[in-house]
Figure (cartoon, rainbow, N blue to C red):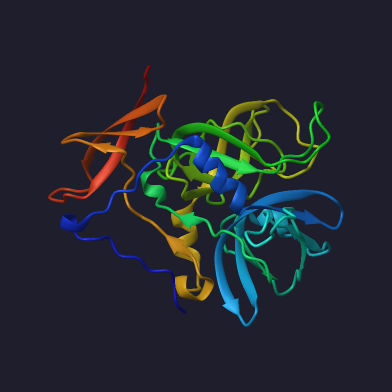
Length: 308
């Protein structure tokens, strides 16, 4: 059994990923996020994380939440992004998937991998490093929510916020099964966005969204299309860190054609701080060493400074 393996670059050759504008991150989401629809009409979201060529066809790998595709009595379709090679006719395409052979549910966590084939060319999302998604880090969530009261149309929604908590260190008194949901954030989400990516300020996938916290004192509910879920949303939502997926993924990076960028995220770097963000909104971040004696940069604190 092989696994996705990556190595941390030596301290003297550390690369830094640049933050990009929210508009640019939104364009990445638009090109990589898919809708996954079931035979009964409900749906969730996913993100393309790999492409391998096989003759004149391309085999794509989509990462999503397991509860989006884990119903054995249903069939599923992937509604793709607009193909890069679509020419004048720019529209999404519907692709049938085989529930038995194209869906793989990962163990112990609410994650699944979906494969589909197409002659079209789609953008592959870049996998980032969720260890840098610390409290206060700016992030975005993208997915396809169910139509609301204001509009009956289905559209990709892209919302921004920040990481509000890391739940990796479990409370010893808690008996709740987290299913891997170890990062919380303040982005607005709705039912149907489960399986969509959580993106950092460089547009890299750092988590998979799947739960919305509600005030009914019940466990956080999967954000599928189940209208029976009650309780008002609190504004806190949960995702599964992408490093959890990397540890469980049994195929190699080369097998699925994935792209990894695990470098720290900085925009302007000084001796003890970094500034990331857009022209109008900067995030000043203090830096510390990852471990004693290490010069590897770790972003830990974020404060927002609005510029003129």
